[in-house]
Image (cartoon, rainbow, N blue to C red; front, side, top):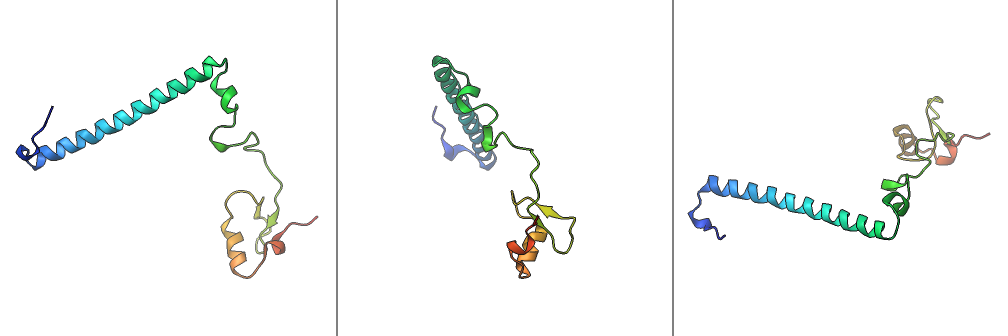
Amino acid sequence: MAIDLKTLNHNQLTDLISRARLRQEELEKEKVVKLREKINALIQSEGMNADEFFGQGNRGGRGKNKGIKVKPKYRNPLDPNQTWSGRGKRPRWFVAALNDGKTEKDMLITG
């Protein structure tokens, strides 16, 4: 099916391009689905399931301890109610204190 692009006007070309992009996305999704099916079939042929193979509850890089509260490690010197466990993104108050010349050691909660 050859399309003579020189015979198409601007609107027809735009329509063709958008339909081609949609089809390209469909093909990519189909490719992913087929690959998943192949992987699952291979895992099942070995007598396992996806949870056993990939590790149950450990998908997406999240450990089994997700959501468990951790004791705070740092306290805001300007507002003692604000604390941080030292995990995840640094809070704004922590970054601001560092920029003001404080050190991490200055904000450690002791005892």
